[in-house]
Structures are given as structure tokens and as C-alpha cells.
Length: 257
View (cartoon, rainbow, N blue to C red):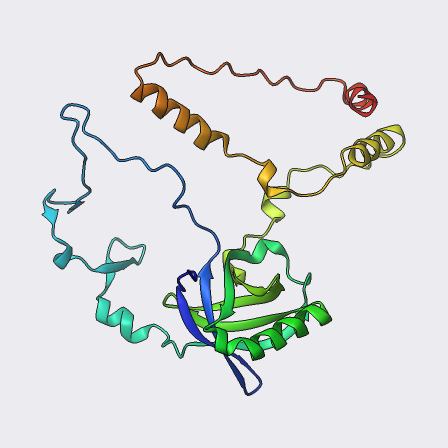
């Protein structure tokens, strides 16, 4: 059975219109999900909106959005106001330019989606675009109204299909200057640099996503099984991480391992 699309439209390139579909590539549905429970009754707790001044519960029909002006009051926006101002979707992924695949810093990558032909009958033009991108080692930068927002999208060939990655806007990506401000200007050379390079060379490998496991999920699953079976819950022994006092000696030991 074909995967269900979350969006359908056209990939538009200089007068060409290729019917395409977006499919979710990342999903959290397989993760464990917990409910909030009333400790006294064992019943699930539901969330409610409460007026911050009166303490009264507010029904969903009485809610609206407000922008904080910073002066203690709000600019109120109804759903109709927001709908009238939001960009209208024309169901088009409109390509603006083609760039080298590695030109965009991955810091701007937000979320990937699989891009496919809308139907098998639409595959010919899709495959032509995909193979053209692959041959040129290029990516397409496109814009589209997706999920009620105008988004920038990076489209790349991937296997039998393509990947459409939503991009963060420039204002959403924080400058590293403040985070890196306290890192001193140091020049590492001589034996320390040689040892660091030797460690990197020795540990060279390839990325295998299947080799990484979610230890938190595994621990929670084990905890749930133990609880269900009435077993004693034993706390995990935590390893103490000691700070390296002699960096050069530590590098020597690691390189010699």
C-alpha cells in the first residue's frame, strides 16, 4: 500500500509543472507516550484553559489569540483575522534557483519530507527532474505555502525519489557569536595535534543509523515491563565522569589503545 501523502501539488520549474506529493519522513509515533494521571484516583487528567485573573475555566469557543505589546495589553486576533492575512496556497512548489547540493549550511535544515510523483502516471517528468539534479549534483531551492506558512524548501535527488527539506528562515537561526564568545584563541600543534589526528584516523568509520539506539526509550520500555510484572525496580548505576587533568597524557593513552 502506498504511503499516505500529507500534501499534494505541483513542482513548478520554468513553465514545467510536475504533479508531486509530500510524505512524512520523520515520525515520533513509535515513541512511548505517557498520560498525566491523578495520583489519588488513578484517572487521566485533562488540560483546561483558565483565566489568569479570575481563575475561571474558559471554553474553547471563548478563546482567541493575542500579541503581547510589552505594555501589559494585547492586540487581539480572531481566527478570521489570521485566515484573511495568511498567504493563500496555490499548491505549487515553485523552484527559484538551482544550487550545489552542499552549499546550504545544515544549520538551516528543519524537517525532511519524501517527495514523490502524485501518481505512477506522473512519474516520467518527475524522474527526468530527479535524474537531472543527480547528474548535476544540484539541489533546487523552492518556495511554497505549506501547513499555512510560506516556506523555503530544498529539493534533492534521493534514491528512487527526492527529499524536500523545509528550511529555517534566517531570523530563526541564531548567530554563533554569543555562544562561541568565551572560547579562547588557542593554537594546538606538535605532538598534541599529531595525537588528535591519529585518534581520528584510528576511529574512522561510516555512518550507520541502525547502530544508534534510543537508550531512553529502551529504559522506559524496560521500566514499564518491570512494573507490569511486579518486579523490583533497581536504579541504574551512574558512571562518574572525571575531568581530564593531563590532556597530553590522555591523548597518548587514547592513541595507543
